[in-house]
Image 1: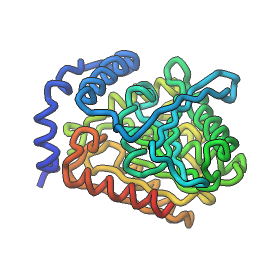
Image 2: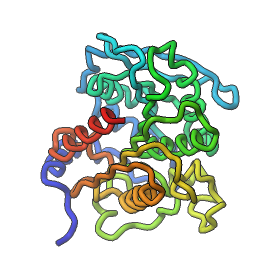
Image 3: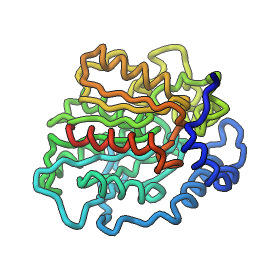
Image 4: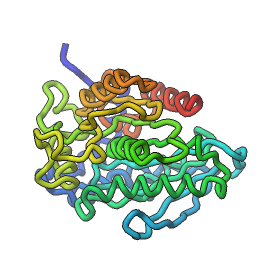
Length: 322
């Protein structure tokens, strides 16, 4: 039986066909064209979604590893939270080449509302203007800043959960590898990797998946190429830093407890499954979910689908026990 969209996802796609169809078919390597068209699509999709009235946003600036001033946006419930609470350190997706705090503002605010926790969203710099190592080192610098300022924000530095989707999930994994290797103290409490982009060697179409994929191999080649240049996809394990492509890490021991999920129609399904298996082999407490009939970014395209609701509940449970 051939793979197919979950029926509820198929219905949702029919409702946003105009927004998705408006995206041009771009050649491999056109990172800026993908940025323009995808940011416009997300803006159109989010236009009718209200910003949660119970959540406020406050921008903070800090200096990254190279002295550049960057933004971390704090999303907090107006009712407040208990002192010494958990916090989410959020890294947005976008294939390493697109997206921003502002583009994903409403979904980030929704995370704050749903979890009841403060969310600190990292405004890292994008490829191709800023290739590796800038994005992941920006993210690690932001995590260090948040940890050092935990008391100021009324959070417990030992209860910071690093969370990201897609490229943000890959950057979250790279950030946690850096935190382990540079002995961040206290260590990260948990990493939540939602359909993470982990392996630059994922560069060939997958039979049965590519035609249904919302993030296709040509998009992946473009994102990794923008980040890594001609090193992208190298068969030499050491040619690419594990902080850029965490699937290349030889040692996963000592990483924080991990949650991973991925749809079965996502081109990241095999790299994510393998990464979860390797975490288990490394004796890292690991929770892994895969959902049939779901492509990349399913919860954004079909938030009311049963599997999207299941995903949300699984993430909320992972946060609660993190």
